[in-house]
Length: 295
Image 1 (tube, rainbow, N blue to C red):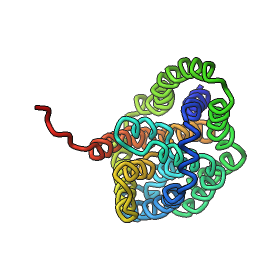
Image 2: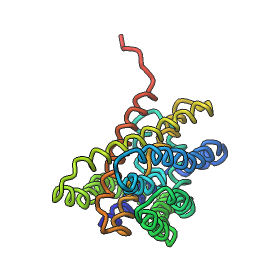
Image 3: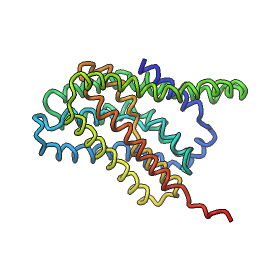
Image 4: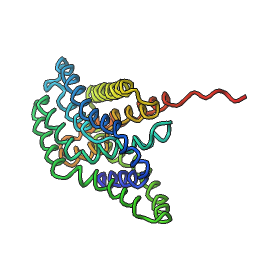
């Protein structure tokens, strides 16, 4: 069920893409190149830093369970929902869609690379668990659950007559909007059932703390990079969102399918999903120009 809802959300995102706008973006690829580079660089900088901090905690495995969940989250492509936040504010929508697409299309290579590179930070058997997830991603998880649904939506946007395309949008987009919170509920049910059966307040607090730290650092580094590149306000907002918003739904599905015996790993993933939406709302609010009061 979770995999179906994920495919529905991504198909809807692809169906809404304006291909002419993407064509203009390809002719000035600086933002796309920077976004993909940051998508790889930020996890490689942030996760080892957080792993170093967790070594000073009393956890016997140095927080490897929390790190496993976070690595699986930050290794995922840019969340398709980032396009909604860009549309809400005054962001650069073509740049945002391009960043979602390029990170999604590159995910069969980038996701296994990040998982393999960061796995040595883990202990207590979590490194092997992460390697198992990497094999699933490399064997076609990203292709079948991320790339193909998005590509199918793009093809539909390109080949369908305008009337049929409009009708399909009228059906798919509301279904996807309903499917997104439903996907969160499906992912949450696996984690919350085990938490309610055996409440662990320290685990919940640790999951929130680690997710908040990694989410905050990712957004902050994205904002710093956007300033360093001297991007326009709207484009800078889109790049910042792309750096901080990862497809947490895809990582939750990957955990559910590859690590069914570890539902507690869903806790930091769900926390990250909620926190990145909160951070995105602040980015959008800052990017909106202050309009003078009407006389």
